[in-house]
Amino acid sequence: MIQINLLPDVKQEFLRARRTRNVAISVSILAALGSGAVVVALLLILGVQAGREVLADNAIKDRYAQLQQVEDLPEMVTLQNQLGTIGAQHGDKTMDSRLFGLLQAINPSQPNDVQFTAVTLDPEASILRLEGIADNSYPAVETLKKTIDNTDVEYRAQDDNEVVTESLATRVTIGESSFGESADGDRVLRFEMTIEYQPALFTNEYSRARIIGPERRIDVTDSRIGVPDSLFADRVPDEDTEEDE
Image (cartoon, rainbow, N blue to C red; front, side, top):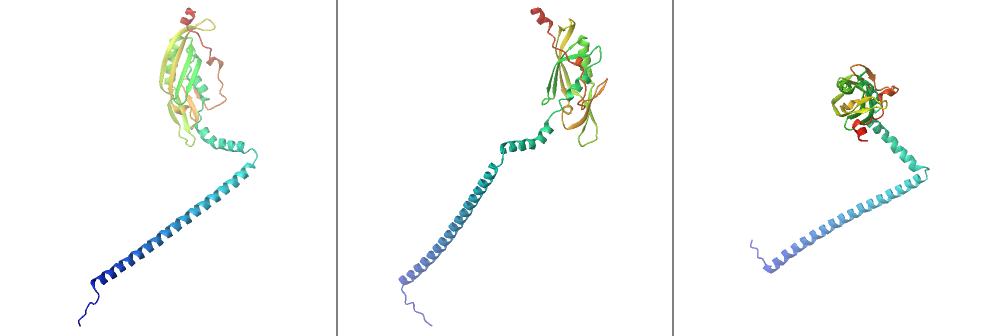
């Protein structure tokens, strides 16, 4: 069979161009419909978020109005906050009351006993600074240092029955020393001493702490421990200062 193409080339080009146009129009319509759907979805999301914000604001205003009707609200909130921090503060506090038992334990017996004129405790650095006077001069100060070097601290954790014993001091340093005259007119030695102690001594994490000296054992957890008046004394002026005056 013989087929004869009666359409000219121009007509065929026109038909192809029309088909291409129809395809482009269809694609554009579909893209426009998709964009419209996306815009509608975004508008719905924004509307939902705006509605939720309005509801949240109204709930906050209603709750705030209810709280405003409560009497002494600021005092109640402050008290609640303080009660919430009591546990942390109790865990971080230091047992400074153990210092008195420590001073009794390290003070040598007569005739090398000393009297303290100033005691400075630095819990953050675990350093204890002592200033005092000694009737027996340098032998008393040296005996005090040796007593500290041979003193141990015994403690146990709150939830552990194991007893731990460590040396009280990691380092003891004797500072400046000079002679002076006491209130009774006696010639005494003024001295300074720095003690780097074990942090466990004053921490609240351990209970039943004891200081074990070469001559005595003192329970420093006993809050009723008696501190003799002879342990402390007034400051004694330096002899050089008196001569200058």
